[in-house]
Length: 418
Image (cartoon, rainbow, N blue to C red):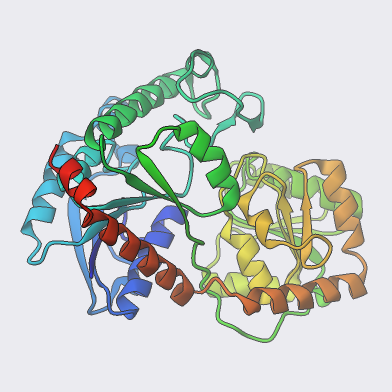
């Protein structure tokens, strides 16, 4: 089998690229031929250094680095991205059996959907966020700091001041979303687009938004690259830890205030717009971004629990899975997909993204016996069915086998040439 994986970057600038790169490596290790096509050139992640992975850069520019007007145009429809992608696919010595898209908003643009459709190949799209349906990508209202309840591209959506940056940015995103929907509707009429969800929660939310029969909904866990080791001893830690971008939608401010009320220090590994405000909270420590190995060592040494109390409907934050794998209790938002992996009061807690609710849970984490029991159970339960790279690649191979079998059916062949 030969799979072409498409994404914006060959380095993990976000969760989508991280999973795309890890998927490529896991598939290659299973003997699958992989071509990774990335929009922006540059240094590649070392994981892509494998004889089974062929890498193709399209030489595009990240729209965030363009002048505003140029970035807006290319973000809506990048004709050059479509042209270069079509040429790259045509130039491959051996054509792929299927195409798997992970991210497209930063360089590829919705224009690539027309190329994918014209290929006639089975196409999978992993939904790391809500961009396939929601203009701002997170189905979250930044004006009210609450999840959105509007139908994407409805009259209410068109007039909502929900964008994190400005009304002008909202306008561009609305146009991009409408153009994207039209491209998918035109290109995939009569044959399905396989959508891969990373949590049951995001599947339950996105499937009704997307609505019609153009899509087949699949479910595959993201990989967690944590080597099995002895469980941590979270009872020896002193702080509630948060790992990631320090923003309100991710709930970083909730962790700092709830930990202060509970009488525990808080540790923030990451950076973002709330960094200075967090440093001003008594007991809070911000250490910035750290390499993955250093993050794991720091959590094993300092964390009584890892908290991810997102206000937005996060699809599946990896930090929760990584904590459980290390034997550290996790506290997740009841709005996040990662909460599905937590057994309440057995391996951690699932709570509303609310200071009072979090403070109550954090207060319970002052009990050493409870924290130690939660950590041991988290480690045992996680490793009974680990979300390893090998397991992820196996699930993808099963998915691909079903897609290629369906593609060989007469109904698919007829629709592919309509």
